[in-house]
View 1 (cartoon, rainbow, N blue to C red):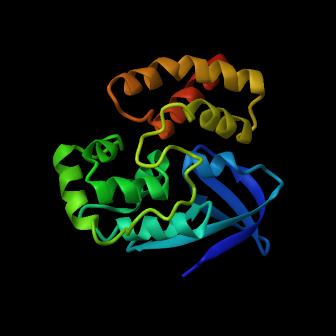
View 2 (cartoon, rainbow, N blue to C red):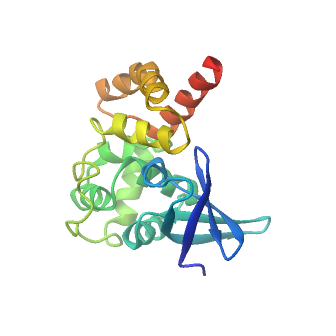
View 3 (cartoon, helix red, strand yellow):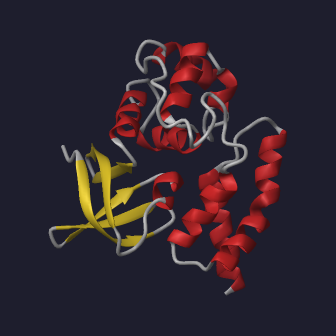
Length: 208
């Protein structure tokens, strides 16, 4: 198992960071939150989880060991693969997920793209004794147990700037996708940052 990778950031993409390790570029799948903290040419250390499939080896990267642990625990529930586990962590912090599960907060889970009402109910049952209680860490990214409703702009802008866009371009792209985020908030859901990032990039590509 590759527990972590450390080295200069060689490249950034909407869902991937390439970390140079011993002269080799390691492609690591990351959430927008994790990508937003990286800069090309700067040193980075990501906790990682290697997912092995018959036809692929995929490395997932996290800001810290706690995120990685929750990522792996989420996959012990039936029907939860690495992509859905990553989507859950893109929407909620580890502690937010712990609190949602411990309090039976179905609405918090359905805020994650790909999880419906029945799926949320099943996950609450299966994960109740696995994630544990909130540990009080990493609550700054979003309120514990609640979707991200106010920090999505900063998160999205940081991700775009990290990808090499100017602040002005990032601002314009964020404003362009704001109606999508506001619609999600109006429905009581978290703004889907990964989807918003893709939409923002499409806007920037059209502008160029």
